[in-house]
Structures are given as structure tokens and as C-alpha cells.
Image 1 (cartoon, helix red, strand yellow):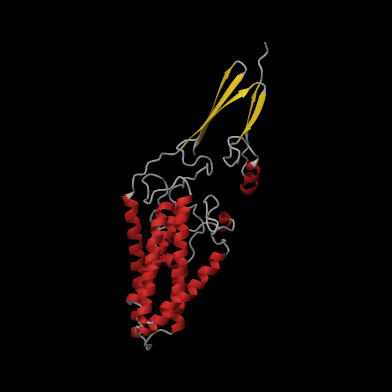
Image 2 (cartoon, helix red, strand yellow; image 1 turned 180 degrees about the vertical axis):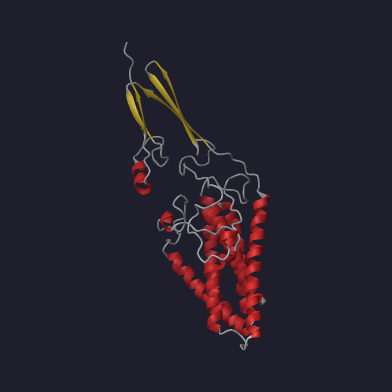
Length: 335
């Protein structure tokens, strides 16, 4: 936790107060091991899901069916859209709904004013999920009843990349890496749309809204990265305590924990979210003329920082915290 260090110096009838905040290390050394982890995890998930589709094809080939009923295929891809993360070797925990407080991102993350309300996201994703199922069933029928086909594998690749991106965004909260990773998510959905369209134009058109939404999400993600100061690097930083590890125990679980608290390493959170964010260290020097009294902010949320404006009361009510101000009094010395 950043250390708040007040120091006092008294001389005659004058008292000076200096408050400084020592920040975490600003090292930006790239973590190449974690970069490799992202790639390996995506590849493993793609391989598991592709193997599952191939196994289904083999079972169908040995049965009396020529191919699966289209509603079954649609439901299969609806399921994969909702729970493809069961094949991810990374921890794909999601934030608790209570932590989001109805927002699209955690409360400590700044968002542009045009961010859709949090309540809209479930409806958007459920619609996209249904469109994925319908369009995939049409493609399956057109390619001759083969799940292990290039266009459907393009969808599997898109889902695998998306799950790795979710780990980066929701678990690690690496805004810079998320901003770059979302470009891969966007490219993969566009690849799927094009491949679906080439097989059967109707399927490509049905899947197109997914590309529209992810395009919006891409702009939103990159904007969030830019407006949150200090701007985070676009690569994982070595030793920052955020890296998600392989969590093989999650494989096959239909419902993974809806919390990021199970991360193998603690997540370092900022305390100061608004005061001189471009400065490596915030320091304030003030002189008090005796007799006088000043009330200083310790929650870092005051609009009149370094003086308290009562913002801690709203913070305490919302979080259950008990932070309060620092009250400094300078008295005249008796002669």
C-alpha cells in the first residue's frame, strides 16, 4: 500500500506540514513469460474446443444420423458462446456484480461519458450469443454437416482469444494490454464474419452485429486505457503482481467463481485516483500561522485537496470504510 508520511516542523509561532505519497515502483520491464502464457493458453483452449467438435463429428459419422439437427448445433454454439471458458487453462473469474455497482467496469476505473450502462451489457451479449448460434447452424448445414470446418473453427478461435482477453481485462486489470488485446478480439470476429459470409451470405449478415458491437467495445477499451492516468504500458509488466497463472482446476467447470479475489497473486490497487495523476509523487507543503486549525484530506477524494471537503463520508457509506481527515492545530506558545 502506498505510504502516507506526514512530517511536522515547529518554529516559534509557525508550524509547517509536509505530506508526501511514496508510489509503487514505476518499472515497466516487459514480462515476456506472461506474453507467452497468453499465447499458450489461447492455443490450448482452441485445441481443446476443436478436439471436442471433431469428437462430435466422429460420433455422428458412426451413428444413423447424416448430421446433427440444426437446433442442436445452434444450442451447441450458444453454449460455447456462454461457457467457452471451461476450456481455458487460465483463471477466467469475473468481477462480482456487487463490486461493479451497476457499472460496465469497476468503480475505480474511469469511463468515458458515452459508456453504455452496465445493465445493457447482458442484453447485448445475450443477443449476440443467439446470433452466433443461428449463424453457426446455417454454416454447419451449408458445409455438409461438419463441425470441424474452417469457418466454424474461426468462431472457436474468436471465442478462445476473447476468453484470454477477459482474463487480462477482468482479472489482471491491465488496461494497456487490454487495449492491444481487444484488437485481436476485433480481428478474430471480423475473420469469422467474412468466413461465414463466404459460405452463406445470410450467416455473415446475421453475425455482423457481433462485429459492430465489438468495434464499439474496441473504441471503449482504448478510450478507458487513455483516460486512466498514469497511462499503463501496452505490455505486461514484470513483477507488478497482476499476472494470472494457469488454473487447470477450472477446466471443465461450467461455472467458475464470479470473483477476481481468487487470483494467485494480489492485485495492486491505486489509492489516489484524482490528484496530480501525472506526477510521480504528490507532495504538499503548507505553513500554519498560530493560532489556527486546518483539516486535511486522507481519502484522496476531496475536490479541495489537500483540504478535506467531507468526501470521505460518501466513501465510507459506500464501502464500509472508516477513513477520516487529519486535523492539524497550531497553538501560540505561552511567553
